[in-house]
Amino acid sequence: MAKISLVSAKYVIHATITIDGIVEKPDVIGAIFGQTEGLLGTELELRELQRSGKIGRIEVDLTSKQGKTSGNITIPSSLDMAEVSIVGAALEIIQRIGPCNAKIEVKDIEDVRVSKRQFVVERAKELLRNMVDKVMPDSQEIAEEVAHSVRMFEIKEYGNDKLPAGPAIEESDEVIVVEGRADVLNLLKYGIKNAIATNGSSVPQTIINLSKEKIMTVFVDGDRGGDLNIKELMSVAEIDFVTKAPDGKEVEELTKKEIHKAIRGKVSIEQVKLDLERKHSSDSIERKDRQYERRPRYDQRRNDNNKRYQNNRSSQSNQQRQSSSSNTVLAPEIKAMFNKLLNDIIGSRGAYLLNSDFKLLGKVPLSELAVTVENTDDVDTVIVDGTVDDNLIKKLESSKVTKVITMTAKTSSRKIKIYTSRDFK
Image 1 (cartoon, rainbow, N blue to C red):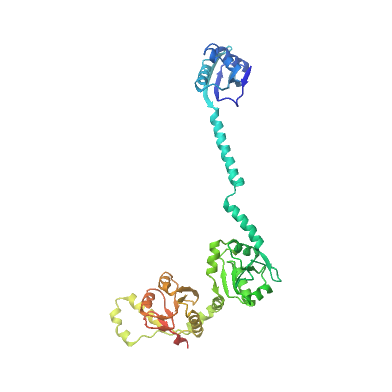
Image 2 (image 1 turned 30 degrees about the vertical axis):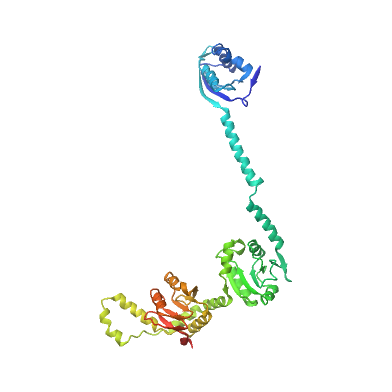
């Protein structure tokens, strides 16, 4: 007798059975065939359906407890939807199995094709992911792999010390000095081929010789080790410019944008030396500057007008601060520093910004000076290239600036002390 398996069935009938007594599986199966015989006609006779393969093996799972039996009945079928529903309903007419009362209830008719379709969909998703991840790499991955192999081919050893370097190190007029081989590779990745690595904390003789022939820019990591490398290179080689990676980052992990931004922001070696000197002597300068301050003096005219401002305490206090600023005598060390910065900025159409401790905050174009000072709270002194006029002074008076250093001045201010080049001779 032909019997179909659960795999080839379209539907599966799931039913529960409860029996008031103890019976065996053959008793249940016999009752199903016997009590449904002739009920549905010859076309839906269970024995004939099973013989033709339209009904599969009837599975019965029973459990006996305290004189009663319960379990589940599973019947696979390849009939259509209406016919399998009729067969399922026919099961519920069975009321006795052997001498015992029984009750069969159909809980569900499962469409096996639904679960198969779900399996197909999930498996198809998995296969597609494997194709995308392994079989079909995108163009970016291919390009990066090729570029990496090219960069590894382009990097070479330079000089007697066999330092890692880019292919354009000899023909370039400018050279970028980095710390290690990985830094050179990262610069090559973004098209910068004139980099060379020191390969350690000590400066190789190759770097020293190269600094005498080419314009040299030192590009170090944004940590304390980078600062130490700058000092060591400055002491033995002829460095022209210095730049650093952002704080906490290394050159080898920078992106293209970060690399180009750092190179554009390089500073001259003179400014680096000035920063180091100022940092070393800032404390002593501050102490000496206090010794040269003298008590503010007020002219007779201001004393005569004090009555006019006696009801406006804030205005009077402001005037006193202005007078104090305008009569401050600068220490010789500060004068020398101001004079050096003033000579350095000539012709640049820019301005240096210093705080109250005479620490250099940065350099800005003259066109951006007013806006920068307005948005920065700690600017105390401005060193300007060119001539200071009324328009510029009015803009600066609304800020916290107390000193302006310039070559010549065509104006004066009661709030800001203006020093010209004559004051430093």
